[in-house]
Length: 343
Ligand SMILES: [Zn+2]
Image 1 (cartoon, helix red, strand yellow):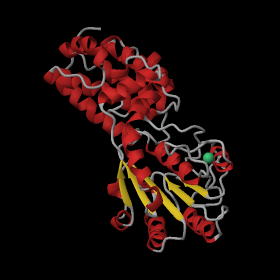
Image 2 (cartoon, helix red, strand yellow):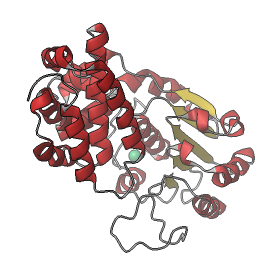
Image 3 (cartoon, rainbow, N blue to C red):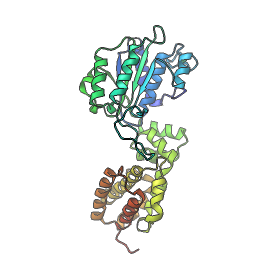
Image 4 (tube, rainbow, N blue to C red):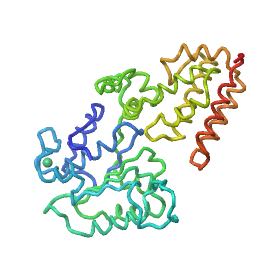
């Protein structure tokens, strides 16, 4: 839980707009927009300011009152955060695994909504206060839990505000959307995002941002991981890349050490290689344009297209318990064979 009021610069106009609605806020808001632009942080700030009893003049939470203290500690009795990552020990959907690789749930389960019902049946902790339910990402609701939530939205409990955060509102039930007031969260402009990244001490901010598809928070995370830069350096070697020393580097590059990250990095690189070959354009690896230019001269276009298809397939299989390192070695070996020059 964030302990300060960390609104991002591109969120200020939306914040001011909602602030003016504060006294007549609808019982459900759908905060929607692209992933990686800070929607959850915005919703948390909003929740905290709605609970705070000593608001600052700009409408931000004071961070000093008992409500703010509880909120920052994650123990506010009138606040619930519902997300798919909650402990599902009591839910026996899957047989207990002997390995320590139990996957985090990707859905908001009906049990979580039932528990919410019990919470909302209790009286508010604060006399005349509000209760806030924050759900993120709302598209993680499955059909059963979405229908259970819909019942609550149709007969909203007193003094309760639902904040639904969604990257993919098109996956929500239309009946849920119609019960919410939609708040479209803006993407920052490129210059705004680059300035913000530079303020966070991010080097190569423009490249980082384009690699993250324009999402500043994702760009910051990438920069902190420093991952893709070392991978781009390896891939620049083309035919000279050593699959056996590179595979562990790829797998160990991200903090999450995932096959998915390694394959995404390869896909982005090959997308740039293809794009340079066909139109001399580079989308993700702007600072590696000269390396991509050099590789594009020797890359075999047909093999590259096949390789891209192979990567898509490998990504679908990325969660299978294969030997990732062995699989990645094979993929990287195939990468070195894309180039029509002697080793
Ligand atoms: Zn406060």
